[in-house]
Length: 170
Image (cartoon, rainbow, N blue to C red; front, side, top):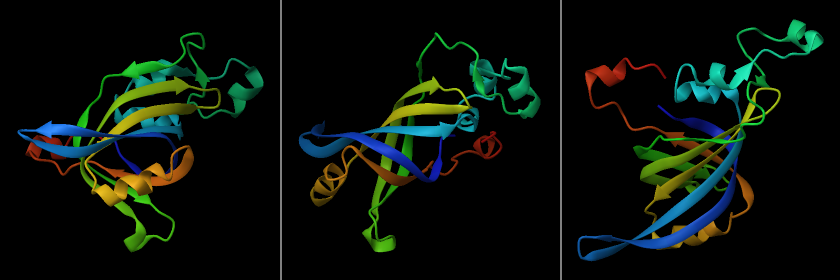
C-alpha cells in the first residue's frame, strides 16, 4: 500500500474544479506531485518492480562498492518513464504549512492515482502522481499558494478493512 512520511515533494500544479455529486456541486482539487524518491518506494507497488527497473552497476569499481540488495543502475535507460496503473482511495494527506501542528493542511478521503516512475542512475526514481482531494474553500487558496514549490507531505493509506489486508506486504 502506497504511503509517504514527512517527505519533501514538489507541488507542480493545483487544479481547482467542481464535481457533481447527485444534484450538488462539490469543490475538488487535483494536486500534481513530483518527487525524487529512493527506488525502495517501488516495492510498495510490486515486490519485483525495483529489480525489474534497476540492476547492479556495469562499472566494476561501482559494482564492488554497491550493495547487491540495492541495484542502482537503470536496466533499460532508453525506456524512459513508465506509467503505473494504481489507484488508491481513502487516503489522509497532511501538508506541512510551515508552523506544524494546527497550521498543517489535513485532507481526508483522498484518492491517489496516475503514477509515473522514471528510474535514475544511483537508484533514485523520479515519481509523479496525482492526489484528488475535496478541501474547504479557504484551503484551496493555501494550496495554490504553494504551486511550483517544495512541500513536506505525509500520505497515510486507509486502515485495512479485512483480515487479509492486515497481512499484505507493505
